[in-house]
Length: 85
Image (cartoon, rainbow, N blue to C red):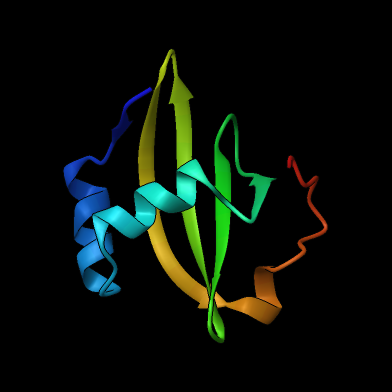
């Protein structure tokens, strides 16, 4: 499995002062996965008072990162969506 981070996602990672390594680790070992729109999934990892959300799609054996960002933990942690872990 390869985790691919396209140009748009790289810009978002930079905007939020994240690292590609942290994004990949979140996808590989999330604390929580919830359903996103369509066939997208969202991997969550807690970071102090925030949560890192990585939106991605599985395409064959590869994972394509759509975007990644920090969000308020109280807004997304333990969402009412189906938790897939």
